[in-house]
Length: 405
Image (cartoon, rainbow, N blue to C red; front, top):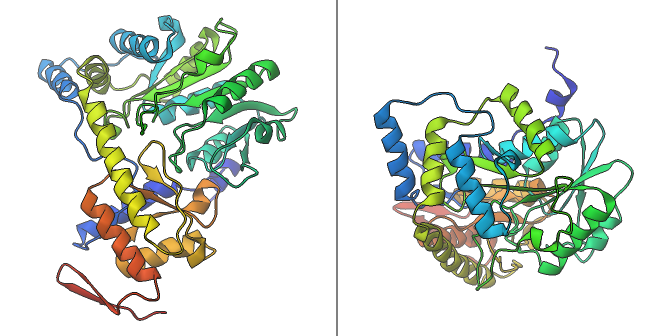
């Protein structure tokens, strides 16, 4: 079969594949624990559910404008003004089928073949593949000091004549790192000076811990005109626990948003009317669910970190946000793929190999599930890896016996 060069070189999403693996194991009745997940377990806000129900009852669910309904755009404008101190015009806003779709449309609108996109490592697994899908060249930048916190010097060293865009994701998936204010200020200033597009993937920006406040890149932007190359991407998936609703958005200059809208109109048309209506309910409704989720995740983070710090051979940097951690398991093996598979095969705990995020030796462990999942999952992993573990482990009534060293 003859496939395109792009099709031949694009791999499947590692995180979505593991979701599928976990679902298959659970359907078989296996006692799998999914520590690789990327969605909060809380319920969506009641306001979102009531809004969706109201529209369903009306039966009026039709096509929408390719850039989103007026009601949703109005809600996004209010949200942007509240959290970013800037009130965009409707022409500066495009709603999409999830933040991923917004990023994809932005890449289509900005990149030419062989254009380079720079992003710090560790990075979300989809960034390199998304850039390749539009014919661009992904360029990951690993902090020179081996930490999860990039420096502007790291980015400056790889910028060249083909560089078109920088993507920054803070709080970061997979590490949970919250980039310092100084870096955000530096990267905004640097991109303005060099005429580079700066895409801020802010999907986790309210899920932060230890009294932190969301950082606002507009605070450091000198250009807020229609020539600005700053793009803000966000959505309802994470902060409102609405992953299955698939509603995101982008805010940028009018020319960019017009181009993105034209592209989206041919690729997907407008997002679902029903799900946009639910998103309006979430954004305009009572916000206590966001704080409730944030507080729950912070407590889960504390439990996970304490469990991992009692685990000899594992190095963990405390996440400052999201619902991910990215501990270093290289003491137990140089291949994170083999290690992740070993853990799944032996004790049925799903993790995500660090190599998928650009850092070998690490595993991404999520703490968006229950406390019991966290403690039982780490207990199983420790039993599988620690040579000093007892010979037997009970999972419910099932007895596992170590047959490896």
